[in-house]
Length: 206
Image (cartoon, rainbow, N blue to C red; front, side, top):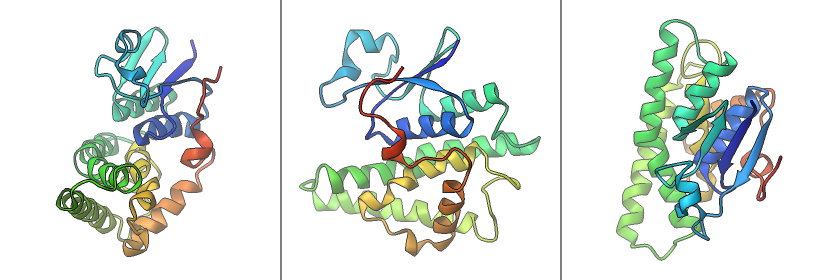
């Protein structure tokens, strides 16, 4: 059976899942979940994703939720971007770090800048400083390296790229993190790559 991705075109985690499918050369149907209208909290959608979040991936009678779990699942199904031996679990370490340190802070900074600029300035500064620190850590890890794990792109790179792709919308300057900037350009050069608003549709497909 094919893949069906449930997501939202403005959602960084949805883009992450869609990018993974695209980079693996996997066709997928798409169901747009309108977060502004509360579609993610409806009884129908909660049967798909018990957490009331996007994305969710349906495949072969299974439902997989949480974007980094989706990356791991698709990687296993496609046999791509897993690394070899120790690289496989090293890549999964990056998935955990991205979900804990990078994505929450970059995504909230983007949200405040684009959608909620009247949020308390101290709150905005807290998350902006944390986002800059996460980008600094990423930049340091990429010093002298092409990819985060091993000699080829892996799920570590795809996971960490997704929030970085939206950094500019939070006025986070990648020019301040030159290793991250160069790495992001390498990710964008992978076969099948598409940027967020080109990849993620606003309506159902398939």
